[in-house]
Structures are given as C-alpha cells and as structure tokens.
Amino acid sequence: MKYRKPIISLIQGIVIATLGMTAQAGDIADKLEIAMKAEIRGESDTKRDKNRKPRETLAFFGLEDDMKVVELIPGGGWYTKLLAPILAENGQLHVAFGTRWMEKNLLTQPGFEDVKVAAPKTKMYRPEGARFYTLESTPLGLTNQDIVFTFRNYHNFDKAGREAMNQAAHKSLKSGGIYALVDHTKRHMEGLNGENGRRFDPVLAIKEIQAAGFEFVDYSDLHFRADDELEYEVGRRSVSGNTDRWTLKFKKI
Image: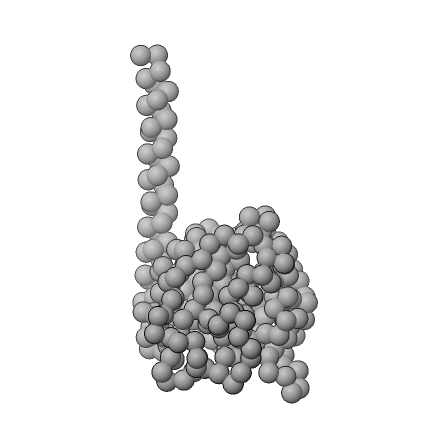
C-alpha cells in the first residue's frame, strides 16, 4: 500500500497533462475556425480552403498559439490571415521576403498591427533574362523561432535563392525548430521544360534542405493528388487548384 499515493499522483499528473494538451489543441482549433470565418478573407480565399486544408496542414506541422513563427514569401497573405489571429494573443508572427504589397495593404488592417516584417530591405528579384527569382543571402535578424513556414514558394527560386532561403530559415530557428514547406510536385530528376517551371522535385528539395543543416522529420500526403499527372503547368485549367503537392517537415539540428 505504500506505493499507492505515488502511483495515484503519477496517474493524476498524466491526466492533467493530457487534459492540458487537449485544451491547448482545442484552443488552436477554435482560433483557426474564427480566423477562417473572418471578414478579411474574401471568396478568393475561402474557396481554396477545401484544397489547401489549413486545419490539417497546420496541425501536421505542429503549430501552437504561443509560438514564434516566420512566414517566408507570404504573397497575398492567404496563410498570414490565418496565422496572425492564431498567434495574436500569445505568440508572434514575422513575415519576410517579398512583403512590399503586404506592408501597404494587409498589415495596415485591424488585427494585423502586431505582425512584424523581418529583413525588409532584402532584395528578392529576377535577374534580367532569368526564369527564376534569386534572393540575397541576408539573415532575418531573428533567433529562437519555433517554426518557419513557406507555402508554394520553393519552386520560384534559382539554386542560389533556395540556398539563401534555407540558410535564413536555419539561422532564425531555435535548436529543434521546425522548417515547414509545401510546394507543387515535379517528377524526380525531370529536366526543366515549358510545363514544369512552377513545380519542384521533392527529392532535390530534401537534399538541399538537409545540406543547409536540417534533419528530415516527416512528410504528409495531405496534398497528394492522384489525378495530377505531373505533366502540365500548375496554372492550366486541368490541374489548377488541384495540383499534387509535397508537404515536408524538417528540424534544425
């Protein structure tokens, strides 16, 4: 009987911890649902929810509402409109690279005042005559971040630009921090042609990101699309909005 109290205490501790984790997951889910219904998201945003699966995608990457998060190349802010409200109370969101439009538009709206812009003077550009963008190898000026996200951007850059992006992510993350990427799938080792410029080989992505100091953690088939033959440009009517995408999760070593 002398072991009864320690055993009971251990069980109580496990129950309390489990309930805490469940409550936290519930809080994030609730915040995401509210963000998804916000007025700032127009029809062009909401009609993509079914395809982009933000609930499942953010859960796979392990987002929590008290994290320090970076979104690279946020574009028109589709994910920013979800991340900012989730992190507003307990966390922090930075956006970086290609943020000029966002600075003048989305970040001036109510509810986005606390989103910070990292490395605003970094040059992201397409050299004259080049097909892809490049990026200066400039640090974000951040440390100890929990997650760095980039959605459907990796394919836009040349080798130097991808290396710069991976290095910036690595330098800004804490040890064990997560680098989270989603992009359109290109056939492995397929040469560049007129139809696959906006796709990227996932095997090459893994190789490059590991070379930047990351450990490959996991992948998800959330965005696998069997009916995308990987033959056509992602903007073509036959695959637009239904491209096969790889979803890769890395950890800073």
